[in-house]
Length: 298
Length: 298
Image (tube, rainbow over all chains, first blue to last red; front, side, top):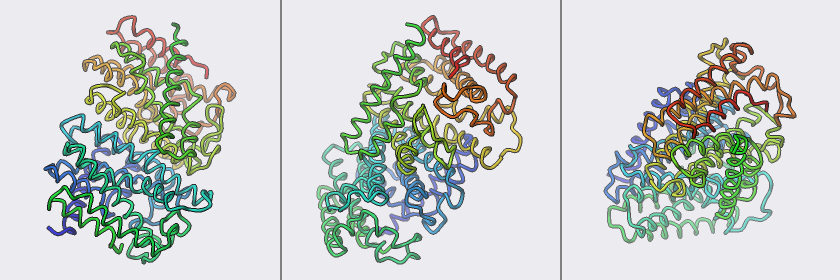
């Protein structure tokens, strides 16, 4: 399979599992309006890049995609929740996402807030389920890792720093270390954890787990920087959302300038690939992922 | 110790642990603004009734308060998050909570949304930690239970039904079964789980776990109904929030009228106490809690 085919296969597996998880929530008594809003947020869009990373990394340790998809789906729920909340009028105030109206435009703000809350919550329900792994120590480890990656010192904290800059003008001047820390929290932590989750599922030794975490950390920074460059240069049609929205935001492109950002991006690609040195050709999908992230056009 | 003293002891233990958890988040790199908002939401207020239930129920199985407080604190984080989001302008639009400005008044909306998100997330981090219980199966069980109680078919779903009535006028006429289902989700699920969490921590057999869940379900309904009656009759000074706010809301008081609600409350108190029949005098604190809930004046 080519890299594109592997990415698409991961996306279709996660789409199917997400639909099943939301059907189950509806059958379990969740209000139809809430489940519809969760479906709107989570289904039918996105590259499913984080789930792909979970599946690829778990595969390095012989974990079948049919097993790893449960964890991959949990991560995608957290990613979807973060988009719903970030798009709210009080935050980034975006009307479009993945070529569709954002949840608060399609429904309303209270429904969007609750749909985000419920997607975050259901992610932890999934990880705690025995379908995730037979060993409860693995499940508890995954919960701890996901909570750390998405919490106050991770994704939510990064969004806070981003909005402090955007809304409050703090700090007055962006430095590269500051922006890299912000982006490592906001985008990097969940991408890094996607890779580490594969190692946790595979009950990898600590050295290999650290190697995948390093790969994921570099990849996450590269992912955000490529996104910022695309936002500066891209066409809104190709992206399914408004371009040029992030000019005031705390991007490395703003801190470094576009040329230096492109250089940094090449270094991150090389570093990410170098972190995979102890893995054989089974890790080629991850190597291609690094190149894909740096060179993608949408 | 009297019931009041036990309630106050639980509150002070949880307050101390909450402060430590938030200090640790700050030390771990969470942005100061976000941690301050989380502190504003979680510290210095509330009866800490859910934590008290965790401690009392765990105590029935010989689990020390020093152990159970970690789980109790996680539940209080979820409760605090729900208040922060429910108070938002897009939801209940409340300016005061526990005698202080709500988080979005003290800070702003985006900070409040993120503080709620981060409090929900940190709850799962706490449950997954080895400080919660040495057996990871217990930790995974607690995570699954908390996610179910607070998710789309639990607390978040109940808030959705409540707002559907409040904002969209649906359903046009409230029936008692509808309102009881709504309240069982919105308030009952987390109170029920507080009791069940004690049984999970104590690795209780399924019969005793079910008994505590039944007790918690009755108690949760009683708690909400007493709250609604207080809201109708209470003085805002004693409550630390605006009274008479909930007249349009989907309360049993609205569905039944105040007199029938008072009768139902007495039945719930008796049912809750009856569910404890297999427990000895060690459960007296829980029996007093049922009476306290029904007769409290603030």
